[in-house]
Length: 187
Image (cartoon, rainbow, N blue to C red; front, side, top):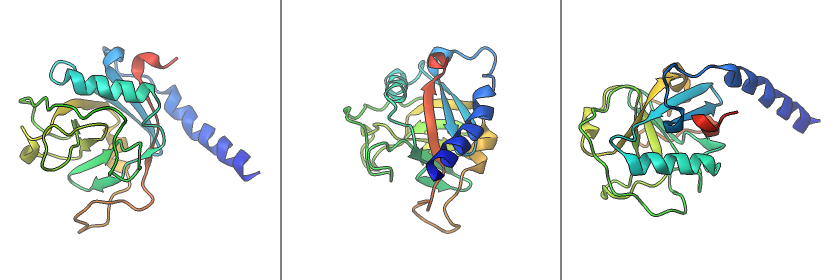
């Protein structure tokens, strides 16, 4: 009985997200749609500046790698990080090799999406990414910009954040990416 209620609740929350229209003039082949526990986020991928990273994101989305993955690190006023479909805690990556950096002159402003990496290796991005809550100029030319939120920053703002003063940004009982799809694949 509890499972039936859980499925019905999931469907109830999914219907409004599925009914949302995508932004006009969106290149659906180069955009991902993230349905979260808080609502929908649409990200335009920047294939012009980070083609390898954008392809990786689309590949993993199509494989279902990102489904039910938590926003494990969310720091108010900074960023929300997700994409660890291996360990679900920020320590894992996909089965694919790490990517070489694709730095650009794009400034890390509110809504910009960047690839996470190990701190000391610029060529260690794999599957994890983050969305900026605010300006993050200190990240410019240090991380690869892969896209920008074109719809749903209000949803990003609602994600459960780490407690104030948390240096790690680790979230207890975090919000999740319920389903991630390439926009052109949505039927």
